[in-house]
Amino acid sequence: MTEPDVTGSARTDLRSARPGRPAGGGAPSGSTTGHEAGDAGAGARLWPGDHGTLPAPARLALARLVRGPYLAAESDTDTWRALLAHEDVVRERLADQYLDLVVDADAQVAFVRDAPSPDAPQVVREVTLTFLDTALLLYLRALLLDSADGRVAVSRDEAADHLAMYRRRGGGSPMDFTRQLDATWARLIESGMLEPLSGDRCTVSPVLRTVFGADQVAALSAEYARLAKEST
Image 1 (tube, one colour):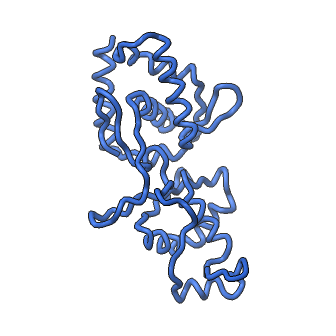
Image 2 (cartoon, one colour):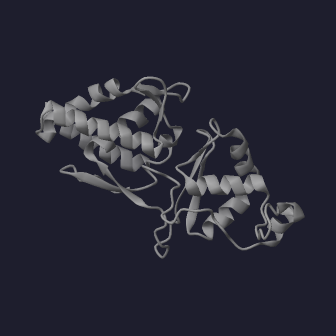
Image 3 (cartoon, one colour):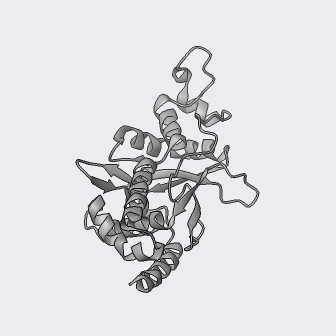
């Protein structure tokens, strides 16, 4: 993720907005290695003409990671267990596509990102985060880290109360700010960072613990705190 342009919008890759959603989409493929064939055996054939060698649970974990935005133990326990059981070969198959697997054992989430090599092509799509998007993500991440049990639910009104400190910065009307907030709320739901509950409440995805680096968060938080003071 790049530091946001506080005069407009921020460019970021999907590690912060949609981790695990590669540009090309579709299910992954790869060459067969000896130990993969040994793990799979003849039972790996799932349809006529199937050339895959992984057992079905490992394939499903691989496909879920490629499809994104992330894989979580809480919402998909069986696939999470399959990932842990076949983690080495899943990493190999992802590496064949210039993708790196990130597994957060504490938060029990996993996602993929571009391989950390200067020669690797960009596989994960980039998205644009607005000023309010980034401000809300920082706020939600702080709530998540402060939670004793790692579970946080937040309402749209609570988000609006927090982001109100930036409203004057945009120079628009209250109606403009409401529309911008509605768009931010919808984008974070669509990206999987917020998971709808009843009414206007959402749970905060545990993946937010992982997708931002500590140095990145510190720099962004300091800048946003400065801008909040200027807006008062």
